[in-house]
Image (cartoon, rainbow, N blue to C red):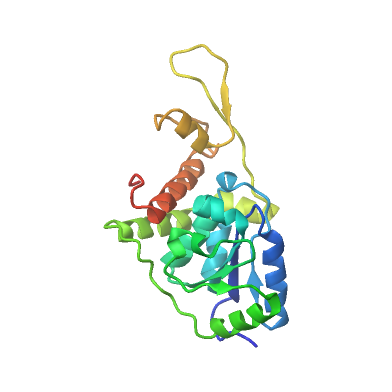
Length: 247
């Protein structure tokens, strides 16, 4: 069976990085055995150290998105930044999204972003894959019921941010090396002669200093990319929760 589509491949698989990789791989193999092409992120980079647009680029190439709901997502929900990005970008492109509930995941604990969608329970794996293959033939985009008066602005800003990251030199370096490149950030507390404070990410420094941070660096050191990736995270948090600050 193949899914009729003009996209590069049929299914993008979203999954919780804590416990969903094996499930994602098994699902990919099962779908491709049925002639349905599928892709999932195999990188090991942490979400807050990902300055590229690989995920968004792959979502744009897929006809459908499925999210594997495994036990870790019952507690972290869309606190898993990769899952949050994947779902939000799929929605911004009006991709069809199918939640897949795997054993151990409480059925009523689906992230707020996808509670309006009809899930598929993967109780018996092979039977569920067959049902998923049938559903993919007719699945269509269903808009989220989360209301935000700034939704259109946020969506467009998110897309523009991704476009910038995709076309930046950094993304070309990532594609050439086939790996994500990142570094730590050092800050000197204002008005002190204390030793440098080191943070793994700009987000950590931003939170530590309650949003009062200036980012300095030489030409080509990554200032723009760092802030653009940080803006993407801020936009995704607001899209998922209208009570968050408006970027």
